[in-house]
Image (cartoon, rainbow, N blue to C red; front, side, top):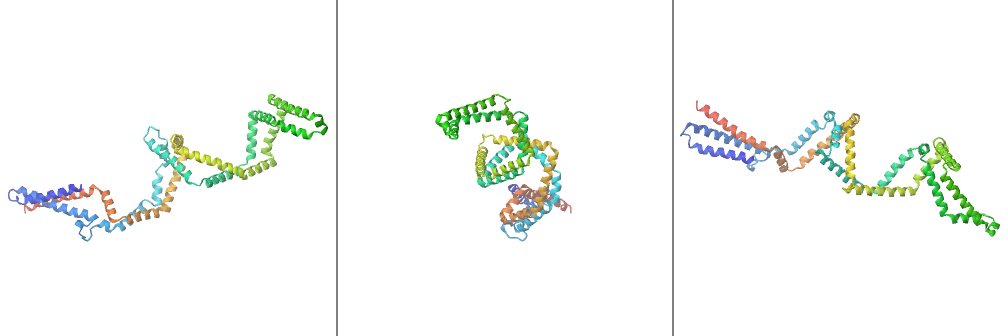
Length: 406
């Protein structure tokens, strides 16, 4: 467009000098010459005006030219003040945010189907979130983070009264007969343990019986009978659901369930056991090992495109989007939070934002400011020159027409 405007100005100059020698041949040449002369003057005037905004015309330091570079700092302050007064005031931000349903817009975006255009953006969002998660987990001190999480879990566990909860769970388990496999498993474990430690049992009986019995060799018979009796007892309890010993075990479990919920002494013992367990260094070491495995697993899954973590995050985001779309009360709460946050940012940091804009523009050199503003205005600057050339020519031709009748 700059070449077009300059070419039009040059064409008017050529037309003016060409038609100057033809004025006596025909009256029409006078109109053409007047048009070209006035167009040339108008084009030159507008070229000077446009150029003077950004630089000195022809490099000559004429007063009141290069207006924008010479007033760069004042323009920066004016821009910043305009931004502060018209965009970053709490009242303006609140009024603008009050008409926006931010939660529903976010919900529509998150719940968009994979066939819609938003799916690519959402995939990039989940991919970026997964990578961010991996980098955060790698950058944070694993020991410190693990200790913080352990402390947080410990503080929450300390608030929970474990005893009544355990009592109700045990009571519910027995009501549904879900404790029977546990008792059977315990009996089998007892039998296997006894089998693995037969020699130890025999040694204990050998050392406890009288010397005469040992001398007579009856200790082996006694220990064999004791072991056979124990095996028989365990087998009977395992086979017979109505065995008295099994009933005693169930009676004890029922009493334990009741005491866990109602007996202060039992509840206090459970709480003391819980505190001792939480303060045990071995538990801390166990937790740190568990946390490190969890952390490494999360990092690997976040970095592995085939792990399915991205799909899980997309499914989670889609569910969140559906909830935001349908739950008006949730929308109200989120919109209120977003509005208060935006107003708070404008109120607390509006001055800092304005200062950032002003100082950034001031740090630009004059050439940068000129180039950016001139590029932003763009083609319209050259249309000013073109219009000035054409309008000047029409005015000149009109004046020639008037003066020809005087």
